[in-house]
Image (cartoon, helix red, strand yellow):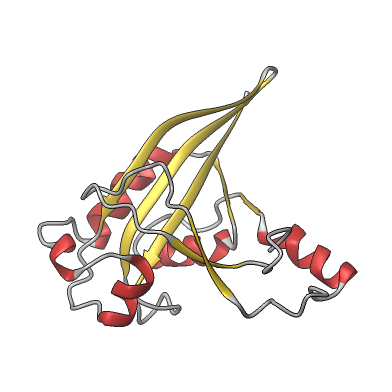
Length: 166
């Protein structure tokens, strides 16, 4: 049985050296002979040690008040490492998430399966959307997994206006 950890972070920006983690979410996924099983979940807000700003609040739905009393990045990452063990990490652009985790004490060199790689290859092979809609933002329904504070904002995605593809 193969175990994967699907991981997603929310951060204050794009640079692991200067920006901070504000949320870690993950689910253990087991690949069995019968299919795929979702297992234990890990979810925590993280205190970035500074205000996150209105842009990040609009993007993520996370407010400064949600982070009061949250663990530091070092504590949250240590707890996440204990949860994850030596499983393979999977996610869309998972290298981004792992770079932030590594910057905050997670052991480097984790095995990963990046779902962005196949989509990039597909985009190169098939070209841009023929509907010329790749820059139209859309909102998708929220995840069924609640956040630590019970909120569950929608996530922005770029989606074709025809609804047929992203």
